[in-house]
Length: 183
Image (cartoon, rainbow, N blue to C red; front, side, top):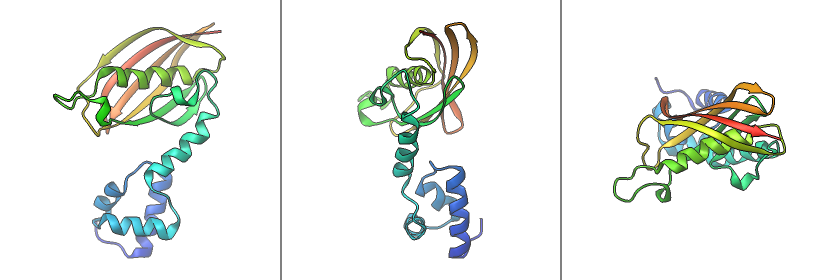
């Protein structure tokens, strides 16, 4: 991509961040072939907060919609929720989530993100995991960014089949099918 004038770049930055509020300064700098500091200055001049603050803002708005769990029980940041339909969460793999020996994320963290996302998207006062069928597609490493997307595949009386797909970038790393029982 050719270098743009500041005003042109700022217009494009604003549009890109509106479409994808979770894009990092590093990704933007690479896209526009400029320094991270240039992107930060552009954001500052336009009043756009850094990616962590944008995520926290989106998450705060969504936690109020959840009925079945408390916000501190959700693993990762809740990015989007449409009760009984779809939900999305984000989690960056931290040092305390990985094995010291090989920097691979322990599976229970990935499972917990998916399971709590499935539970949190249910429009009921009480929801429990009845069963889960899960598959880890590849190891996940320290500092990888995981986006879990859950959607209701089937609903029958007080049971929902919720499928959760977790990706790192464009690659699937985990798939789970959860039967959630409600009251």
